[in-house]
Image (cartoon, rainbow, N blue to C red):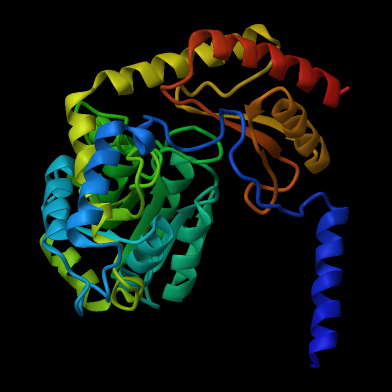
Amino acid sequence: MSSSELERRVRKAIRELEADGLRRTLQPPSGIDLSSNDYLGLATHPYVKQRMAEAVLSEGCGSTGSRLLRGNRESFVRVERRFAEFKGAESALYFGSGYAANVGVLSTFIERQDIVFSDEHNHASIIDGIRLSHAKRTKFPHCDVDRVAQLLRGAPGGTQKFLVTESLFSMDGDFAPLADYADLCRETGTALIVDEAHAVGIYGARGSGFVEYTGTEYAVFLTINTAGKALGVAGAFVAGPVWAIDFLIQRARPFIFSTASPPPVAAALEASLDVIRDEPERRLQLLARSALLRSLLGESGLDTPSSNSQIIPVILGDNQRACNAAQELQREGFDVRALRPPTVPAGTARLRVTVNVGLEESTLRRFALALGKVCSTVCS
């Protein structure tokens, strides 16, 4: 295929995306944040910024190589030890992104002859990691405990089984029934892997995540914990038993073949863990603001899921309708983004509204009124 033919093919695909209301554009932050994952405001916390800046001056900007070459630093070893303690796990390993962590975990531990059970709403990084394992994947209906029980109990004996789920689902804002899954996995010898991307830092007495909140640590094999959301920095920690973390160092391709993250990231992560420990009121404020906004949206005539999380989906269905609603809110000074397929299932395009601790009650009231007005306009 010539380069001109390739260009025509690509341009045709872009036109089709445009016609379907699915073309994406890169848009910088503007207006009041109601779309980011910086739930606790740690990305701009003075102490976190200070620790990172000091580390730049003392350790430099780049790691210079992979962790297995010259890229390892004592600061990363220290923060991994600290995170494992925070999570109540034996050990932890840091990856450069949540995507890399999920792909690394799932392609390393799951083998071709195994069976994987995956929630139909799981993140793309989970899906891709399972694909790379070449194992048989069985999708189950979202958070359907009865179906999961049927599948696990009916699986062939002598086969290693895995159940993979998010704890707090990133697009729906609802929680997995982890207590039920934990009991079923213990009963059937299934390895339970939980992606805590949107729960770590917020839930549980320590703020370590929904696994802690539900008391299901006893049944969880590994957790994947993104550090670029509530923790406010970047990357992700995988936490679990020492032998499993050691195997990731030996076999996880995204870890082995990636340049290590800049050393100052480790200092910022330690600082964010300090803030989560020392300022528990941030978590309480976040949940209170989330509950308030859900209540205000109800008063504005909008239905929201019954979950009490900081992620509030407003489902509009049509792709263009969701884009139009987002643009109207942005003109009103609110940074809200439209989510469309393949990020969400076809026919469920939505506004994904997220709450953070920096939002004042007056702002939430203004936003709820604006959103109610916009939705009544675009849906009519």
